[in-house]
Length: 185
Image (cartoon, rainbow, N blue to C red; front, side, top):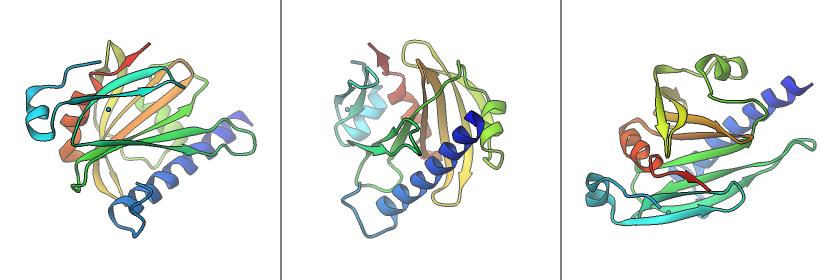
């Protein structure tokens, strides 16, 4: 029962992501859609650092002032705990990313094999281990989606939640630099 519920949640999350991205970048409903230092290259392109705080999951990260952060709840399925989508976006296509936060009852670190267990059709290429914030072990990889095309993703597990950050492949290095400022309190 637990495995089926988890798989169903993953499928719904992928569908919700597609719809949110479509609405933001291709649809007609724009209403749906920042204590670390950012590298000088990010500041030069996107502005000075702002701070985003999430009290529910107890973390903070810095983001450039030219980006805007919004949070959208994801409803749970038949009593399953709900998650959220955090959008970090600009008005320019291809400059921004999303973070999906979901309850997760397994210990990290997340692996390619574990992801493919629930999402066997997900493309995972050029995977590598990276650190988010203060040494949180994460899996970074390139993928491909039908809604936005080539992507760069960073997934990690921390204290009962899985965090899935996704962006356009060309914005991947910037997203990775922003996620290096991540701190759990």
